[in-house]
Image 1 (cartoon, rainbow, N blue to C red):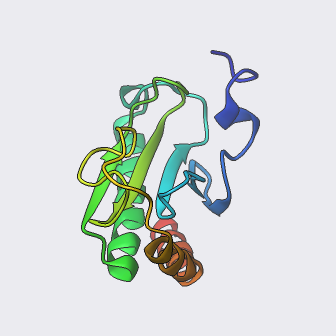
Image 2: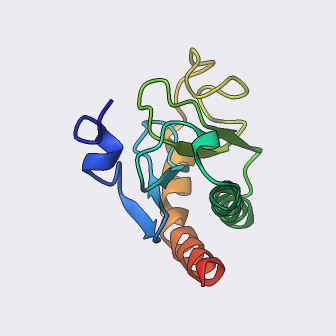
Amino acid sequence: MTTTDCPLCRDSGGPLVWHGQRLRVIRAEEPGFPAFYRVVWNAHVAEFSDLSSAGRQHCMEAVAVVEQALRDHLAPTKINLAALGNMVPHLHWHVIARFDWDSHFPAPVWAVPQRPRAAQPEAALQALLPAMEAQMRRALAQWAG
């Protein structure tokens, strides 16, 4: 895949929460999972090992900042982290707040649903996102210096 073919090179990949020199954080628009974020490396690289040691550390620190914001503001049952890249071979980490009421829990978000979607808890969670994202932006800006 070339950078002109890559959807994460062509645009942000979703609503932009924060943009830094080396990476960005976007909210993924995945139905049923309102607290699904991606930490996307800005340069087109396919694998985590393509980064320098300092780049790998920088990337994982950003993942940790995003995870901590989700934990602090949303109190999820669990946080899922994944860097698959099978569909879009551009380095990005999925950071997903999971709840015992979500349609797929405890299975992965890509598995078969375990139950119908829970509209009321999803809406309540969606209402918390603006304040959580504001805190996430502050934490990322402070961390990035």
